[in-house]
Figure (cartoon, rainbow, N blue to C red):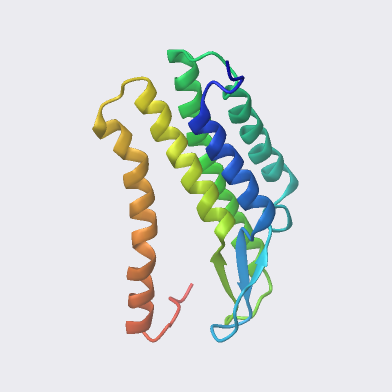
Length: 170
């Protein structure tokens, strides 16, 4: 018998760990003409944010070895939702800190580690909800939230092009 009781969650945690270790969380470009330089999660965010993300990842990894039960799957869903929210906050924190004192032409974009980590967290939520027997509508909530986030970027880029990239006055 395998020690790993939840192979789906185990695969998601390993994939997210590899992505965070091997790729950039955000990308820093001095302007739109130059390719961005990848910046890792631990370079882009604060120590407490990094510690919280690592702790949630470790807790999710530990859940992979626990005997399956309904409360365990609810805990998995809760931890994965919190991780997803922390990843979004970390992206905002990274962009905010990198833009401090930067020229207006500087561009910060989300890197591969962000997308893999956020996707793995959303898939862990969906997997946990499926295991507790939640209906299809409940399982689609995390997927819909992710799709609405990624679908907003092209619209805002088109809007920026229409307005000549002018920033609103503060």
